[in-house]
Length: 171
Image (cartoon, rainbow, N blue to C red; front, top):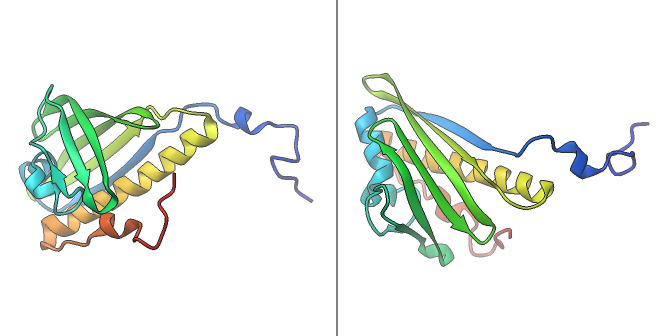
Protein backbone atom coordinates (compact mmCIF):
# COMPACT_ATOMS: atom_id res chain seq x y z
CA UNK A 1 0.00 0.00 0.00
CA UNK A 2 1.33 3.43 -0.94
CA UNK A 3 1.47 6.12 1.71
CA UNK A 4 0.54 9.73 1.13
CA UNK A 5 2.96 12.61 1.68
CA UNK A 6 1.21 13.41 4.96
CA UNK A 7 1.83 9.87 6.22
CA UNK A 8 5.53 9.83 5.34
CA UNK A 9 8.42 11.56 7.04
CA UNK A 10 8.68 14.13 4.24
CA UNK A 11 7.28 17.50 5.21
CA UNK A 12 5.24 19.24 2.49
CA UNK A 13 7.53 22.29 2.56
CA UNK A 14 10.48 20.03 1.74
CA UNK A 15 8.87 19.04 -1.57
CA UNK A 16 9.35 22.49 -3.10
CA UNK A 17 12.89 22.87 -4.42
CA UNK A 18 12.40 26.01 -6.50
CA UNK A 19 9.96 28.86 -6.65
CA UNK A 20 6.99 28.07 -8.91
CA UNK A 21 6.70 29.94 -12.19
CA UNK A 22 3.58 30.22 -14.34
CA UNK A 23 4.12 29.71 -18.08
CA UNK A 24 1.71 29.46 -20.96
CA UNK A 25 1.60 30.35 -24.63
CA UNK A 26 -0.60 30.41 -27.70
CA UNK A 27 -0.22 30.73 -31.45
CA UNK A 28 -2.34 33.53 -32.85
CA UNK A 29 -2.75 33.61 -36.61
CA UNK A 30 -2.26 37.34 -37.12
CA UNK A 31 0.79 39.50 -37.89
CA UNK A 32 3.03 40.29 -34.93
CA UNK A 33 2.35 44.05 -35.04
CA UNK A 34 -1.41 43.45 -34.77
CA UNK A 35 -1.03 40.98 -31.90
CA UNK A 36 1.39 43.22 -30.00
CA UNK A 37 -0.95 46.20 -30.41
CA UNK A 38 -3.80 44.15 -28.96
CA UNK A 39 -1.90 43.82 -25.67
CA UNK A 40 -0.70 47.44 -25.36
CA UNK A 41 -3.91 49.18 -26.48
CA UNK A 42 -6.69 48.91 -23.87
CA UNK A 43 -9.36 49.63 -26.48
CA UNK A 44 -8.48 46.25 -28.02
CA UNK A 45 -7.46 44.37 -24.86
CA UNK A 46 -10.81 45.12 -23.23
CA UNK A 47 -12.42 42.85 -25.83
CA UNK A 48 -10.79 39.76 -24.31
CA UNK A 49 -9.35 40.55 -20.86
CA UNK A 50 -10.16 43.50 -18.60
CA UNK A 51 -13.15 45.81 -18.96
CA UNK A 52 -11.24 49.11 -18.86
CA UNK A 53 -7.62 50.28 -19.07
CA UNK A 54 -6.52 53.80 -18.15
CA UNK A 55 -4.03 54.16 -21.02
CA UNK A 56 -1.76 52.35 -23.48
CA UNK A 57 1.09 50.44 -21.91
CA UNK A 58 4.11 52.71 -21.59
CA UNK A 59 7.37 52.36 -19.67
CA UNK A 60 7.29 54.30 -16.41
CA UNK A 61 3.63 55.28 -16.58
CA UNK A 62 1.34 53.64 -13.99
CA UNK A 63 -1.59 52.01 -15.78
CA UNK A 64 -4.81 50.88 -14.12
CA UNK A 65 -6.78 47.90 -15.38
CA UNK A 66 -10.34 47.28 -14.16
CA UNK A 67 -12.48 44.16 -14.13
CA UNK A 68 -15.82 45.81 -13.46
CA UNK A 69 -17.72 42.50 -13.26
CA UNK A 70 -15.62 41.58 -10.21
CA UNK A 71 -15.17 45.05 -8.71
CA UNK A 72 -11.40 44.55 -9.04
CA UNK A 73 -8.58 46.69 -10.37
CA UNK A 74 -4.82 46.49 -10.48
CA UNK A 75 -1.98 48.90 -11.16
CA UNK A 76 0.45 47.79 -13.83
CA UNK A 77 3.97 49.18 -14.02
CA UNK A 78 5.71 48.56 -17.34
CA UNK A 79 9.44 48.03 -16.83
CA UNK A 80 10.38 47.31 -20.45
CA UNK A 81 8.52 47.54 -23.73
CA UNK A 82 10.18 46.41 -26.96
CA UNK A 83 7.65 46.79 -29.80
CA UNK A 84 6.63 43.51 -31.41
CA UNK A 85 9.01 41.59 -29.14
CA UNK A 86 8.55 41.87 -25.38
CA UNK A 87 6.67 43.49 -22.52
CA UNK A 88 7.99 43.24 -18.97
CA UNK A 89 5.67 44.47 -16.25
CA UNK A 90 5.06 44.26 -12.52
CA UNK A 91 1.78 44.38 -10.70
CA UNK A 92 0.92 44.45 -7.04
CA UNK A 93 -1.89 42.46 -5.48
CA UNK A 94 -2.72 41.87 -1.82
CA UNK A 95 -0.50 38.78 -2.11
CA UNK A 96 2.56 40.81 -3.23
CA UNK A 97 4.28 42.17 -6.33
CA UNK A 98 4.91 39.80 -9.20
CA UNK A 99 6.54 40.10 -12.60
CA UNK A 100 4.94 39.19 -15.92
CA UNK A 101 6.89 38.83 -19.15
CA UNK A 102 5.13 38.71 -22.52
CA UNK A 103 7.14 37.48 -25.51
CA UNK A 104 5.97 37.87 -29.10
CA UNK A 105 7.59 35.63 -31.69
CA UNK A 106 6.80 35.91 -35.40
CA UNK A 107 6.58 32.47 -36.95
CA UNK A 108 5.30 33.48 -40.38
CA UNK A 109 3.90 36.70 -41.86
CA UNK A 110 0.50 35.95 -40.30
CA UNK A 111 1.46 33.89 -37.25
CA UNK A 112 2.58 35.11 -33.84
CA UNK A 113 3.38 32.98 -30.82
CA UNK A 114 2.68 34.78 -27.54
CA UNK A 115 4.39 33.42 -24.45
CA UNK A 116 3.60 34.55 -20.91
CA UNK A 117 5.80 33.96 -17.87
CA UNK A 118 4.61 35.07 -14.43
CA UNK A 119 6.86 34.78 -11.37
CA UNK A 120 7.67 36.22 -7.97
CA UNK A 121 4.81 34.70 -6.01
CA UNK A 122 4.96 35.27 -2.26
CA UNK A 123 3.91 33.13 0.69
CA UNK A 124 4.64 29.59 1.81
CA UNK A 125 5.17 26.81 -0.74
CA UNK A 126 1.50 25.87 -0.95
CA UNK A 127 0.43 29.49 -1.44
CA UNK A 128 3.02 30.06 -4.16
CA UNK A 129 2.00 26.91 -6.01
CA UNK A 130 -1.69 27.87 -5.79
CA UNK A 131 -0.92 31.36 -7.17
CA UNK A 132 1.14 29.91 -10.03
CA UNK A 133 -1.62 27.46 -10.96
CA UNK A 134 -4.29 30.17 -10.88
CA UNK A 135 -2.05 32.46 -12.96
CA UNK A 136 -1.45 29.76 -15.58
CA UNK A 137 -5.19 29.17 -15.85
CA UNK A 138 -5.95 32.89 -16.07
CA UNK A 139 -3.31 33.73 -18.66
CA UNK A 140 -4.33 30.68 -20.73
CA UNK A 141 -7.87 32.08 -20.81
CA UNK A 142 -6.55 35.53 -21.76
CA UNK A 143 -4.58 34.08 -24.66
CA UNK A 144 -7.49 31.93 -25.82
CA UNK A 145 -9.75 34.98 -25.71
CA UNK A 146 -7.20 37.04 -27.62
CA UNK A 147 -6.91 34.32 -30.26
CA UNK A 148 -10.69 34.15 -30.78
CA UNK A 149 -11.04 37.92 -30.91
CA UNK A 150 -8.08 38.63 -33.18
CA UNK A 151 -8.61 35.70 -35.56
CA UNK A 152 -12.41 35.53 -35.69
CA UNK A 153 -13.63 38.80 -34.12
CA UNK A 154 -15.46 36.76 -31.47
CA UNK A 155 -15.71 37.91 -27.85
CA UNK A 156 -15.78 34.70 -25.82
CA UNK A 157 -16.15 36.46 -22.43
CA UNK A 158 -13.79 33.90 -20.90
CA UNK A 159 -12.64 36.20 -18.10
CA UNK A 160 -16.15 37.46 -17.29
CA UNK A 161 -17.45 33.88 -17.24
CA UNK A 162 -14.55 32.41 -15.26
CA UNK A 163 -16.33 33.01 -11.95
CA UNK A 164 -20.02 33.69 -12.61
CA UNK A 165 -21.83 35.54 -9.82
CA UNK A 166 -23.17 32.35 -8.26
CA UNK A 167 -19.65 30.95 -7.83
CA UNK A 168 -17.42 32.40 -5.15
CA UNK A 169 -14.02 33.53 -6.38
CA UNK A 170 -11.17 31.71 -4.65
CA UNK A 171 -9.10 33.78 -2.26
